Amino acid sequence: MSTAKSNFERLHEAGVLNASHFSDHEKKALENITAEEADALISLKKKMGDVPAGKDFLRPNFPV
Image (cartoon, rainbow, N blue to C red; front, side, top):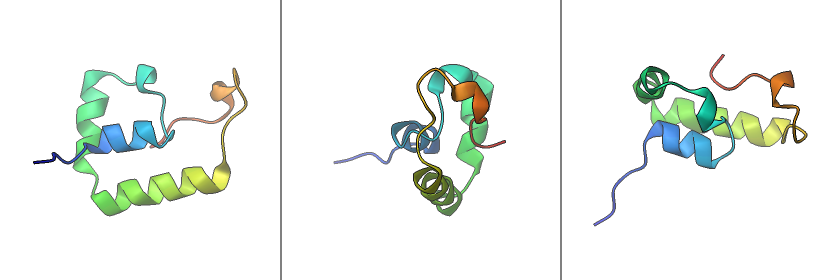
């Protein structure tokens, strides 16, 4: 029996967001987006690529 991952877990594992930048309230709010919206953010992250180490302030976390 497998359990589905939360939107927050999926976005974090895909490198879309830095988990340490989110409060519990914000993490809970991410669960209000649809799976398709989360997929779109993950796809966008793949297209944009990684932010250079130590430069994460140059690109805001998703969602903005």
